[in-house]
Length: 105
Image 1 (tube, rainbow, N blue to C red):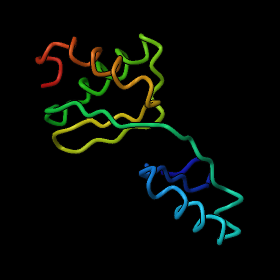
Image 2 (image 1 turned 30 degrees about the vertical axis):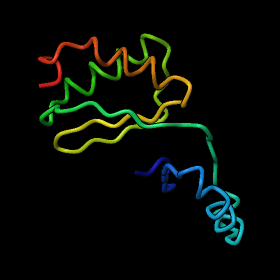
Image 3 (image 1 turned 90 degrees about the vertical axis):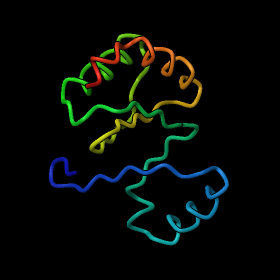
Image 4 (image 1 turned 90 degrees about the horizontal axis):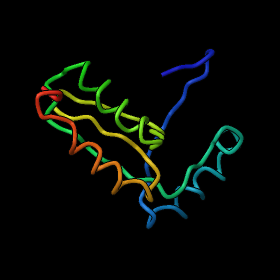
């Protein structure tokens, strides 16, 4: 997506690939100047949501209401994927389990 005419890209990289990715970023002056890195993150997935916009809202609000900051999110036809700090994944899983299954459909 874009913000103020700038293209923004977010990606997660395995720890084992970290040094390789940093090397590639370092080799590109343009990338090096425009890259921001957030380390120690993880993904948590909620499914199925059957393309329900309200499910996105329920999940996002439930996480934010517990002060679990969502760093990024993605969705597909069946799943919602949230990027959070690694240390908060257990709490996030517990929160998402409390959401009634009917909220995700």
